[in-house]
Length: 205
Image 1 (tube, rainbow, N blue to C red):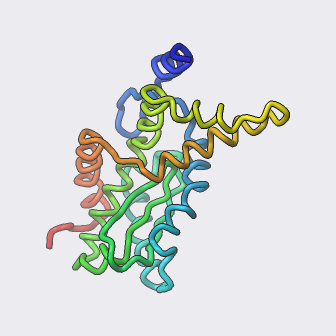
Image 2: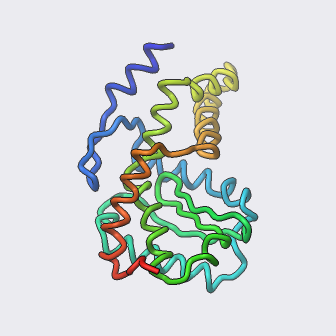
Image 3: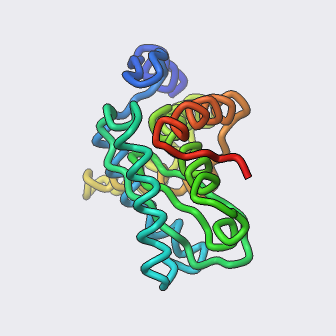
């Protein structure tokens, strides 16, 4: 099992078209998009669902799309969508692989300008185009074998298709507790510094 963990990690490398970095990633962009879409409802539910204020949600979507369309993020294969979450008490923003980006109402009400909102969203876009979730999942598979363990535990020999669904479920579960490392956060910051003014926004107070 160790060999099955090491070989895919070290043999599967891809060059990131946006950052130019060669990364250990063992899923395609389409798989990232599908995984993000699968996990999005669970993530939103943790923060009270989508905010009922459609006008505020539309503003978040508009700002996010302006950043994507004005920067290298538009050259990526990801399908960006921006969501305002109903949670008024939690200050948070996060992104799932494939382009699902979320910001809580608690954070939004503490931002004074569209430029500040853009800075937050640009940081999360940086995580997506940096493929940080995909990298973390690959590292988890290597170091902990969580996905393999979940697949084995849920595998039904009479229903071979359950192996694939079990692996997907394990990956979605991992996304719920995923925390990016310091290097990922710094790269997302650097990308945000480039993306925000390129989209015409000033993140200064």
